[in-house]
Length: 129
Length: 245
Image (cartoon, rainbow over all chains, first blue to last red; front, top):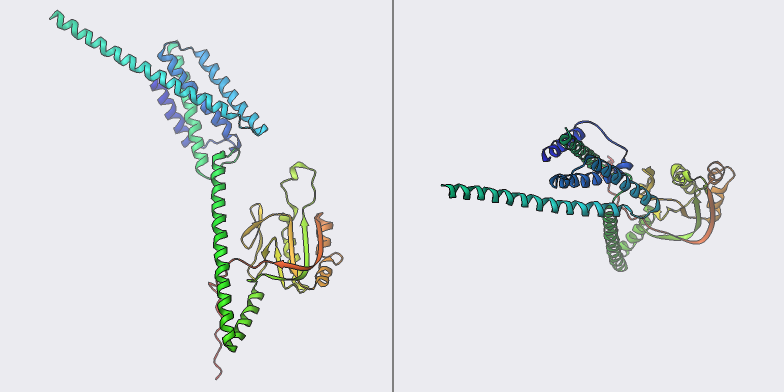
């Protein structure tokens, strides 16, 4: 899982810096909102994979709708002159931290579980000896 | 395959993130991006501008104080000595002619406004700024009619003054200016007024050809500010007088 993400990131960075791709400057803010949604989705997916609840359809649809809503909020806010995109930033940002916290706890739990198993094995061996 | 499909999607999304990140970095590395500029950045620039402006105010004030002191010293010395008195009055005259003194007197005030536009696409377009040579022409005509001091939007026109378009502004004395333009000139009000209001003259041209809204008023007393820049001669030197044999 981590492997896939790292490879994807590296490829993306290489493509972005290597090829001369660019989009109009006035779309940059919307794209950045999409980027935030993507980050949120990735961390969410990592969490659900850890919990073994991962579902492809949920993941993809979630990402698409989130990104679209974020961009729409940005656009409407821009037209109204009210920074509505704060909502998207706060929600996605908050979720990022939440999911990261859950991931951390899961990882730590697993680590301890493994340690315990090893200790139990050692104990069994000792008893047998 | 089902297990891997998730990883593939994840990888693709990561690729997207990397792509956007790198493109953004590349785009923002150069100049300031257009579109939505972060508010924090704008605030920062505003604060910076304000600081610099305040600094400039203080420095100009200091200059004024120092000049006042110099003047008082000159005055004192002039009272003591007739020769110095002559020098001081000469100096005063040259200062007036070079535009480093505030001057006042009768003259005309010309106000130039852009035509009223109804088309929203033309709101950002300024006719007078785009055709800034009209200002030059006007200044030229005023000089011809014997104006003794001219200023555009409080920028005194001196020997080194330029009127040129720089980006979206017209710079005068290196300072960005914007419409409406107020052109002040000191001289004989009637002469000045008639010289520029002559039929098919400069003001007629502005009104007829460019639809600008121009008004001229004769004033009994008009104050024209001094030139606040510095003039350094790097290349020009006075010609040494040849010794007569």
